[in-house]
Amino acid sequence: MQSDITFDALRLSAPLLRALADKNYTTPSPVQAETIPHLLDGRDVLGCAQTGTGKTAAFALPILQRLSEDGKRCKPGRPRALILTPTRELAVQVSESFATYGRYLKLSHAVVYGGVSQIPQVRALRRGVDVLVATPGRLLDLLDQRALELGEVEIFALDEADRMLDMGFAPDVKQIRSLLPQRRQSLLFSATMPDAIRSLVDQILDNPVNIHIAPVATTADKVAQWVCHVKQPNKLELLMHLIESDHDGRVLVFSRTKHGANRLSVQLCKAGIPAGAIHGDKSQNARQNALERFRVGRDRVLVATDVAARGIDVKGISLVINFELPDEPDAYVHRIGRTARAGAEGLAISLCDRSEFRLLKGIQRIIRQDIPVMRDHPHAEPVPQRAEGGSGRGRFGGGRGRQGGGQGGRSSGGFRSRQGGGGDFRASKPGFSKKRRPARTGR
Ligand code: AMP
Image (tube, rainbow, N blue to C red):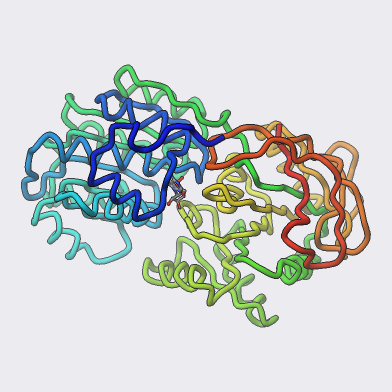
């Protein structure tokens, strides 16, 4: 679903409209159309929106506008807006968005996160910043050292709050909140709304407007999902087969452990498939490096763990492969949200060993749909009745088949969405053309 209104109708100022025009953004996405007016009015907002819906601009644009309109100037070490993100990668991306959208405004911004030297960060803070994007740990370190203080914060934003709690940042967030002025505007975005978020909301937001773009924990619209039942020892061969069959686009592979991510990337490289790895044990520079190689296409494949992959916004990820299923069903939603961003179509394939059936069932419960089974691959295992979703043939084997699991689309908060999408799908041979996608599984 794309909104009918234009950015002009949202009362955005000329410098912001100019920056949007530079980006060729013509129409606000639903989360932007719904959120921006309330934030411009000074209301607190609770946003439930899936990844890739444009939520960063939904809060960055009104924050920039409000800061530029109130005419105040920032003081050294006293930011006027604070945006907290769970990971360094996301912090960098959010701060890049502020730079992009705010390029015609006279506002300064900085980003602080751990794993790198704090010296340039402290220097930037001393010069004075209007907008500070931060991860909780480094922010608290800098607060301890009195490199900044939060008494002038007018707007506080918590991005990807569910992941923040998953990563154990709840105490940090509470401590940071206690250092903020009482009078402020606050907003909180989260892809899912577990109970823990609800209690955080009560502590942070004041009479918020609820923006609900997609039902809680629904999978990203436009992602065709499949599961391959396969024995653990055959997963590597199947992975290579799937990657080689996907002739275009980048492939993001999820591994459950850091060690596993390293090993997989080495094995893929040995097999002639350029692959990098990204996980929490790598230095910030190594992570940015791996991301950059993936972004520019030097590595076609990036193997990631959940934490490290959070916030990856790389265009053209056509395929997400779950080498192992995540322990937490919510992580599945985040993983597959890495493909099909900004309205593009995407494909997510999960490799499921018998020992992972339980996890598959948990995922299907929270996404409230059965994931169709891809059968025509070289290592297909029989599917126990109870774990089975639909059945079908994917694009990666020979033969023909009908998909059993596609039931049509669901309108969502993406940039474009189509209804329909069930229907039959035939795979011809490995590497079939892009048009021959398996049908989406809507709810
Ligand atoms: P986000 O959900 O904020 O991570 O945004 C997902 C992607 O959509 C990013 O690559 C944005 O640059 C892009 N995007 C954000 N707003 C728009 C828009 N109105 N039109 C087209 N693309 C957009």
